[in-house]
Image (tube, one colour):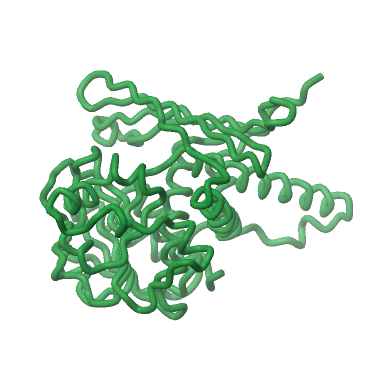
Length: 348
């Protein structure tokens, strides 16, 4: 009889160990992607109603012998109903047997892997002692970004700005409550105030506008900016003018040309050429060095990222289950403290 798929829920993805594992495995995958050893098919997008979307994202990672299919829904009205913007599920498969090995919470996996991609770029684009983070946006993805960046850098200061002050204050309270170390958290009335002088900046808004949330002149020289949000291919969070002077990192050049608003605007304005886009895998394998320059990661999200994150989380979940079984057999489970969810201590 075929074993039932393991269920990996949001609680199984919490804490520093799963996040760090996802960051590391994504690094391995991006090197393969840049080298042409794996691909990421375009997702199928079905629009229905007013900006409501159903997405189906399949991919396989041959070296790891796994594939995945993610089914996701985006419903812009949901936050007003007290529901998440994103719902979804990811099915992880064993390519050799075809067996579905795990079912993972798609919304949480999306948040985790998107944060992990930003953390991977942050690892390679910032000094190891960078400890000051500015976040624009206060939703689920903002929390995942704080968790992820804190896994690779010893964050001690978090500045927050959101169009809704109450949500920014709520995020600030969450950081204070979950941080494993003392973290100074401030809420700012403007994005300009929040990012001034910050060495690490993350944007995670739901803007659908071509007007930048962050102007180029607000970003300190040598800072690194992770651009995550925007609801369609022409939405802009960061002033495209910054791309003309920054090292611009993308997950995949073709995907960025198709779906990254800042990239599309910078190309249309003659600020950059396609050759000025550096793929993340080439950063990870050492082909590109930022060396203190201002840098920008512009993500669009790719199906192969879901595959890599899913296998990382499944392997971590399976290892944790085995460790728990061993402790139970040894009668030592009561001596082991649970993992604390939140901003992890230290950096990998």
